[in-house]
Length: 116
Ligand SMILES: [Zn+2]
Image (tube, rainbow, N blue to C red; front, side):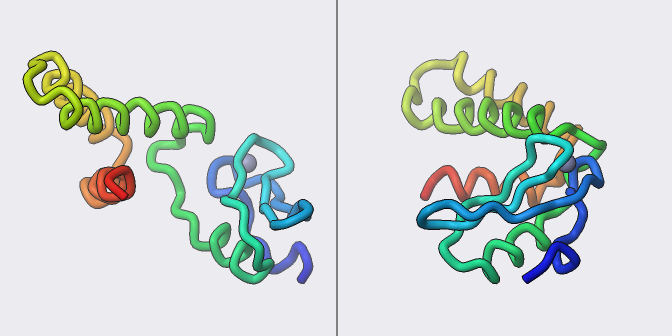
């Protein structure tokens, strides 16, 4: 496995590299903070990194992580506090913001992921 098999960073186009931890591997960008999930299998971690979709409209990796986190919180809050109207309104607002950066399919995938 060498660096040539890794695609450039989907966030900034920087070089990617593999980091070996005690129990798993991670691919990371040498220029920004982007990281893959950890995998015990080196082939799998490369595959994960290489199949990562580009974030729409050039959101930075950090901005994407925060946006997704806040969106998922607002999504989950609706179910935790079904009688609280503010939660519904917050989700609607967050859904609108997400719509500027993500496709409907990507937003739905995040919602499905948060339910698991
Ligand atoms: Zn990068």
